[in-house]
Length: 317
Image 1 (cartoon, rainbow, N blue to C red):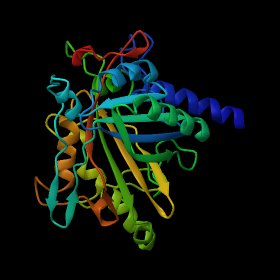
Image 2: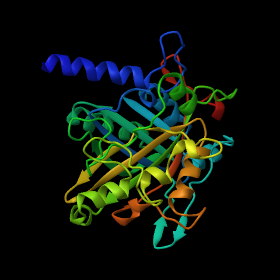
Image 3: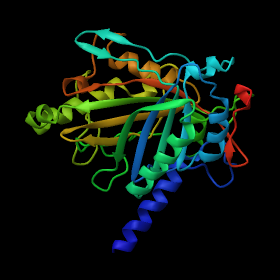
């Protein structure tokens, strides 16, 4: 029975997240489309003043395979190299209605994944040494899967239930625009949960806040307009606002939350979702803000892969 369950999970993940066999895999960083890993480390970097980042970036091209180590490049670094990626811009900052959504840009992001935390730690150390001439790591977030479920948040609810599948996942997450085909755009936020506040809510109130029953993940027709599911119903936007979510829980000491991780062929869909969550359209704020808050927010361009290495030709490298 145990073997049967494991095989079922593997087959579902592959069918959901990867394109069909008759569709060629795009030259993207494959971590974008693969199942969520058991363990991960999100690391962000600033560029050291007065340094030339080119040598470090060229070294990173060979070290970041796009599968176990995904790389994202921030707008400031793109600009420093004298280039422009049209779809990449600053993360929006919102303030008001008792909500602050911060914008915390960085030059570089690495998403390290695997199933051995020690190996991830040592891989990160080597990457830091390689980048030390031009970059300094400013944040490390260790993430993991919870309750044996690749998409479950620490609240017990699923994140990414309505993720696009198969060819639609590729179309949603991977750009096919000439010049950057195979690349993707990453929207990432670290959210911190007030678990004491959340646990104090009656279970039916928790369900109404999310808009789904935790027990069976069924959407609630009677949920209020502020329910997260209703605020972010991707098909309710014009155009539809689908993103490919790869979020993971994090914990440090007594603090915990979710690293919201969303990939898109551009950033328009995520931005539409965020604007509705904060109530910019109709003044109704997402009920998630009753127990959790974003601590960070940044956009990154995830370059394509060519011959097993990052392709930075769009940046002149």
